[in-house]
Length: 520
Image (cartoon, rainbow, N blue to C red; front, side, top):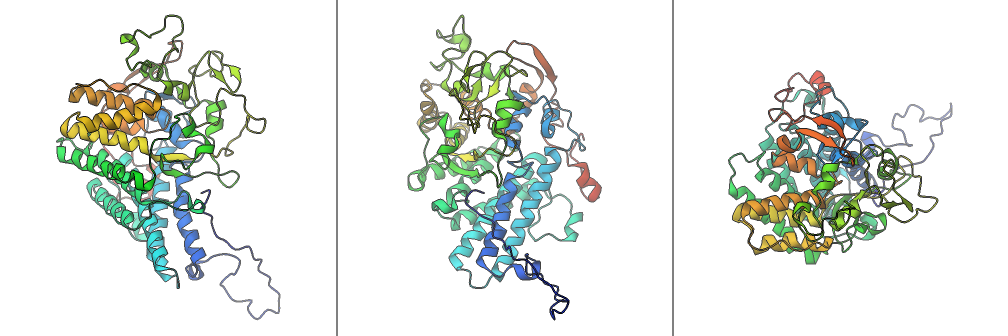
């Protein structure tokens, strides 16, 4: 974390043969269990460890995990199968695939174990200010809620563990997804009640009241969606809308809003702006990511022609219905977000015109979440390597809250004025015209889903959108193409199996009481 620093000791242990304390088994050059929970610095170090999991492989870190998640959708392609995302895109994942399927389970439980230990032990720190302790506990509950939300989103039923790590937990069976969600909501409500609206600059990156409320809105939106709400209980949509509206209602007090420039929103110089509700903070050399390397050179999150074709023209109409559709240049007059997201043949990138073989995999590169634009890069930045990038990853941003609200309200009561207001605010920031009045509920549903695809393209949100909408079986079955309309592969998605990830084989081998998801 950029502003949340791990406390530690740097003293050397000096022993001599005549030292009467030679047999003392408590070292004074490092923390041990018996001596750790004694100071505020130690408590802060433990809480920092709870946050630290966020930047690990399988969660939001280690090279480009969230950016690669986009390649499991119709938006992008991963030609190296980095972390197993190409296998997921092809419907080839299994319990032994490894990569993100194994790591997400392990990392999330690692984070949960740290949070559980913190919550169980922080009361042992004598003299710790009670208000500070309450806030720190709330941060740990937010993080535990986030880790459990991730687990059940991908694996369904998972063991619910609320105590510090213990050997007996290694044989626990899976608890129902509904039970896990109940605990997630409890954690988030308790966190929101104790967290502040904002922090000073020294504590940027910590969970706030708004972060807990925004994550609750996302949890409830998923719960209302077709994958989880098979009976289409509209009260679940109302609960999601109410949760998102609660964040909108506090936006003025908390300082939330839409950052005025869409492309600049994803540049490091604008981190911690008004649109950011919760992000994962990176800094080099203490812990950077590889977003720039992936986007500039490796191209393992290469946009597909299907994503490019999804962008409307700048008049708000699809290409096949717009008078602005160009004859000679297929990339003219598109939604401005296209130029802020995708690098295309004929574009200018890093000061040079892009040839068709510049990004050889699909012809397209992803500019979003890199520091690179059309301008030439400074000499010290134009060849960033793995782990040298510092752009924070936004887990929750205000545009998402507005689109969550629009979606949930439309599903609950149809496209009323508040639905239009929320979705049009996101479009206006991008320079797109408002939706026309008089859309039906089904028409507005399609437009909101399209808007989410475009607004969050390249950010890793779309995979869970097409899962929760249960449209993956449609959009993930069939061929995908390069800029020259050359077929790359034919993807397969089995709706009887692929909406859930398999329980990793390594976990099944260790715990005979775990059961596997159907079809694996």
